[in-house]
Amino acid sequence: MSRIARRLPAPIVVVPTMGALHAGHAALMRFGRRLAGRSGTLIATLFVNPTQFAPGEDYARYPRSFPEDRELCSKCRVDLLFHPEAADVYPAGFSTTVRESAVSATLCGASRPGHFEGVCTIVLKLFEITAANIGVFGLKDFQQCMVIRRMVRDLNLPVRLRFVPTVREQDGLALSSRNRYLSIEERAQATVLARSLKAAADAYAKGERDAEKLRGILRETIAGAPLARIDYADVVDAESLQPVQRAGTNTVFALAVFFGRTRLIDNHWLRR
Amino acid sequence: MSRIARRLPAPIVVVPTMGALHAGHAALMRFGRRLAGRSGTLIATLFVNPTQFAPGEDYARYPRSFPEDRELCSKCRVDLLFHPEAADVYPAGFSTTVRESAVSATLCGASRPGHFEGVCTIVLKLFEITAANIGVFGLKDFQQCMVIRRMVRDLNLPVRLRFVPTVREQDGLALSSRNRYLSIEERAQATVLARSLKAAADAYAKGERDAEKLRGILRETIAGAPLARIDYADVVDAESLQPVQRAGTNTVFALAVFFGRTRLIDNHWLRR
Image 1 (cartoon, rainbow over the protein chains, first blue to last red):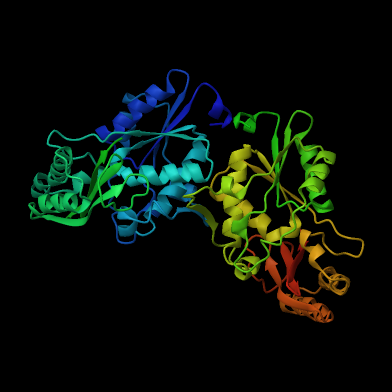
Image 2 (cartoon, chains in turn cyan, blue):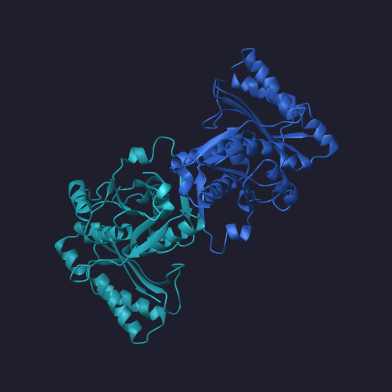
């Protein structure tokens, strides 16, 4: 794949994924197909990137389902599927990383040391390898979207970013490859993430602007699920990801909640 | 400058400099002109990059000579001169850096904390901004060449690197923008860098392979200049920049020597 086409009318759209694809990824790929059009190229990358897992996390047991993934990519009319081996992505002597240090400092960045350095490095590499001029990411990983946006701006990467709304189950649970880790009981209680976001959004809609009260609503709602253990439940600025005192037009409710060893994230963005 | 042309027959050649140009830079630009040909584009960048100066170094007093630089670029038939302000390169909120951690760990990397992180970050940015498909660097900054080569490989940057031999004064002193800091006495003694490299190279030519003995030759020769203070004088592998026990076909003699506050570097590469 050459880089010639970056600024040509026909776009090269990349959808980076770790595989174990679900309807959320399908939404990214279908949106990518629309952006690429008939003459552009839609590339999906499937790579469980070891460097974005913190020590002790689920890298080894992260779900892999390549045959099914390939079928879904085909259904979503992906032109090119990039599914490299870790040894090709990180050959012997590999020693260069990309680090964003502000937007990635809080929330998942605080809980998962090295995670966003792994994300920034692999995303930059995938942009370079695919010669993408458009990158598509899902807003379920809200902080990831903002960290990548900061990286693209800071490093002058000639890539436009497009973010796609979270896809949810009927009962509100955000789709995630990690949902398959949940026991039946955990799965039933996992709806508490979306419910707590809705409770806070309802309070905001009724005029509540005090961030600490909104955090309280998130935490109290989650506490109603006995299997849930909060990693963070915060009300932050959408650009800096720093906690705010008052919620406003660019505030995000952001959650990470453990069920057993399974860590789920979700968020609600009070868009401008 | 668009990125379209990266893989087109006409190259985009970038020569990154910090300005204060001398005949060494002119050699880079003339070589760049040959690589670019008639149809390609030769870009010189002039930017005293604050992030590659360690605390307490000479950022503020680093020589600036833009009118003369522009004239030399014109003589060397540079098509485009990129001379940005620091505030445009590093706007408010800038928080992303590129770090190489192996090749940059020794020599200048050990003496100048943060230096190569600053270099990698600005060079990647300049590659992206200029859409270069060829980058030209001088071998006087040998470790810099190897660090950038490692970064380009690790991050899959679609840029070919070309390295240009060091240009020297008649008495052997490697050209450097920092030579103008030297007093008359220091300038006279500064030839000791090139002389010590020649002494070690002569010993190698006569069969000496023991790296510790070659280091001894470097250090003893430099000790003959009373104003010289060695930062490092080492015999290292050209790829890893790690010290070797025996000199061979890909070994480098590498020096950093202070004269007063002025730090000079030089090297001799026993090429394959």
